[in-house]
Each structure stands twice: as C-alpha cells, then as structure tokens.
Image (cartoon, rainbow, N blue to C red; front, side, top):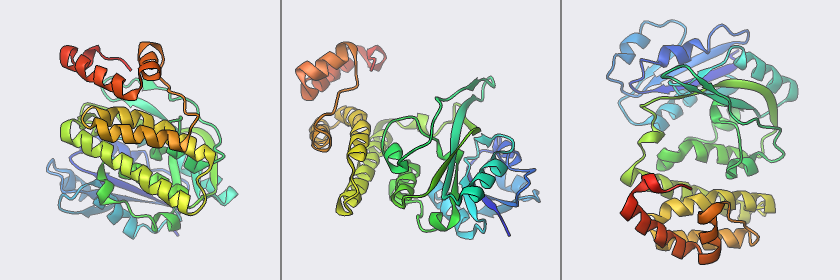
Length: 315
C-alpha cells in the first residue's frame, strides 16, 4: 500500500527537476513519485525515461493544471502532496508529516516553508505560523500561512477537487479554498517542510500586462464564488468576512490601475462584508485613502505613474 503520492508537474525544468525528485527519496514510509512532463523541449522526457524510482507521464503541452490533474488521477497513496519541479523538500518532511497525519486522523498537515535563492543558495526564513483555528479563514486572508508545498492532503478529498483550468493563473488558491470548504481536520507540524525557490524564470514574476489583469480577475472571481457558497450555507462568519476584506483591498488597488470603476465596486463590497474595515496603509498613502477616499487617491496614483513611472511609487 502506498502511503504518500507526490505529484510533480514539470515543463522545461530539467535544470532543477532532479533536485526536486531527490528530495522525495529515502523515506521510511512507502511513497510514489509521479512526474508529469507537460511537453518539455529541453530533454526532460529523455531524462525521465531513464529513471527507475518514479512514475513518469508525458502529455502534449496543456499547462500545469492539466498536468496536476493527470497525476492525481492515478495517485494511489493515502495522502497526496504537490511539489513544483523548481522547489524541494527538507529531509524527513514526508515521513514526519505522514506520521502526524496518521496519529491524528488528519485531513491536512501543514508546516512552514522557507525561501531559497537559487542564485546564491541563501535561505530566507519565513514568518512563523501557528495552529489555525479556521483553515478557510487563513486561506481567505493575507495573514502568514503555509504554502501548499508545506502541506500534506488526504487523497480522497483531493480527488473530489480537480484543479480548475478556468482559474489556471490562480488554480492553487482556488484548490486550497475549495479544500477549506470541506472543513478538514488540520494539524500543524512545527518544521520547515521545504523551500520555495526564487529564480529568474519564476512564473509569477512574469505576470505583466494582460496576463496580470487576467490574474486579478481570476482572483476576484474566486472570492466571489467562495463567498457566495459560504453565504448560501450560512457559513460566512465574521472572521471569514474580515479575511476576505483583507485580501480584496490590495486586489482593488491593482485592478484600479486599469479599471477604476470595477475597483470602486470591490471597495464597496469590502465595507459591506466588514463595515469596520481599517485601511492598512500608513504614511502619506494611508492619509490619502482615509481623507481623500479610494477613488480620488487612485486617480492621483494614475497621474503619478504617468509622470514618474512605477519606480517612484511605494505602497
């Protein structure tokens, strides 16, 4: 019987894929490593074809969402963890989280994740996290939380929540929120589970122009869907309302850069959810938001960007 299935989607990441796979080996518990090559052109499939300790799948390039879903479809472990091919786990993470999950009959085990600079090997310690009373509230908020790299999930739950191609640029966020709707039993394990690797080819760093706008709209629609679901089931607690408000405020700012009218509607929604919402910005920018209002402040920021560019704006 397989204890843990590890799903690794990859595309043109032969430079780091061996490191990711290596971090999943030498476990005490029984693992299966499922690597899905999403049509790489850098020799990834040739290399995977020579490996004996993994299950390798190939597909024409369709995107990470489809690669993950394909891996999940054949996973046979009691638990699943997801690992991007540029990231890697710390030693004994799989065994330690598996034991905690079994001992506590957990649906999810979570730990913190640190940041690793691939250029110089420097490690940046992430803010510490503590036991969550409400997993969904944390995922809805902007508060420090665990990256999905640091999480171990119950397989039977995961198989009921496919990654959604219509939210492809934010599908990990949608997945965690939908997992939270299941009200899973969670357990915190106080270790560093792995390293989120920062490098020049980072996908999120390339979100510019239209892609950035699409990302913002997907993010907004995710929150609309989740809030609607919670409201219809009478589960939109005040804590969750406050958490949504925290996340919507910066999103309103980014959307205002190109679509001010729609951003104003988001701000109205924020105060409907949380009439006591406090604007988080301090200094001159915070003063402008509080005294001049969101609309006027965003118009001023547009003019400032035109005159000085983004490099002169600090938030």
